[in-house]
Image 1: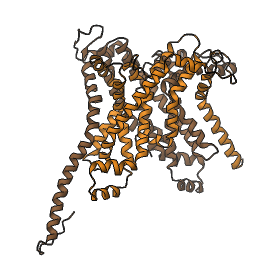
Image 2: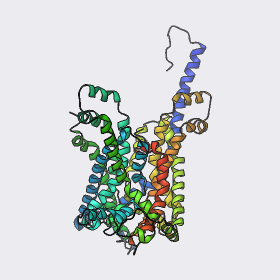
Image 3: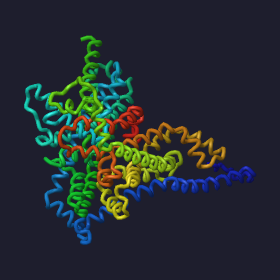
Image 4: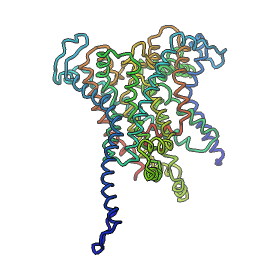
Length: 318
Length: 271
């Protein structure tokens, strides 16, 4: 700032200029603030209109009794939709399914992602090609991925997984009816492993190679170097991966709709809402499921950030 | 064991795992070029006379129209998201906004809001104003879905612009518009491209909203693919061909933008 004035000195022309610029600066700052708001405003307003207002409306819907079969017969219902969700026996299995699918898929994807990240962090011939092939499952349209797995992998007649089992002389498995949960988790793990791999690979490549060499010189084996130095370093990256992965998979809909149609304990909240609203035409009830989904997302995101990592990282941070 | 042998083993192991992981994609592409009777045969065949039967059948089912809708929705939503994100991201990075954290967390919390929480009112409103099954409305919703990621990602690129350059421009008396679009934006063009690409990928692949908000005229590719589930008879070749076409644009885009992918997926948190 411009405030080094000597009291004994007479004000000069220079001081006047300084005082003026200081005043101008303040004004400019205020003006800048408004310009900033102006720059952000379109995006903020657009999001409020497209997401915040609909969300509030969803809460409103969830407090009404409203079936599209009787659209005129719409009335305030208080928390009826929530209590009936709890008592009808649809909500808890659905929450359980959502949490289970998310937890299994995220944990498996992180483990496989870590494996592939470590493998691809080495220098070897064709590494760029291997990396390119590895990220493909994440890029493939989820609906296409689910279909491909359903028919060309899991089908009892033409599926390659069952062909493999048959060739080994093992009994074939009707995956989506016998093991619906595993089916969904396998496909999701396959899709999200590249996601975790990319994030963890970025972490590995950002690691200080000097420290690793120093550890080797000090006689730490590869395993100890990995668990004591690399894993703690990766902590932030694993956290980001788990958080983003969980938040995305909590909303999972595509593989459910295509692989199991919600049978066998795989009816996630998103699928339940879809069924209630667009097959059952019960908007009020479906809206309640939507609100529950938001609450669940907030809870899982909070837990994912706080406690899971303590367990996961317990070995690494001694 | 010598280091060389160890290295060779590790490389071989890596390749076996990578190829096993990639196999479903490879098999999809291969099946798309098989005659239906070969693709749906109980004994998988690696060698066959290639045929475009599957692709022809997919086209006969009107796939071009669905692809056009997907393209429209993805492109328009991406343009809207990028246009709205540039000034917002600029304000949140180069210009020192008051409490940028508040606005930033507003954006991130919107990104994390499940689509299930907003789809019902959107459906009811579009239905009331007779704009269900309208591809532009779907594009508008996708733009909102992608805007937060775009803002976060572009901000991470703007933060890398050396402040001296901006200051120098301001000293020269450059106006705000020129400052953003002539000085800063050219420096972050790769970032804009990456953000646009991520936005395009999400919109192109989206299934849930498309299934609910469109039915026929505006139906996009993912729900079209989903309709194969109720198919009868043999359809693996046509299914594989359709899935290949549907997945190809994004696969190519993702391959090209590999370097920026991590940054986009982590919303700019990881470079």
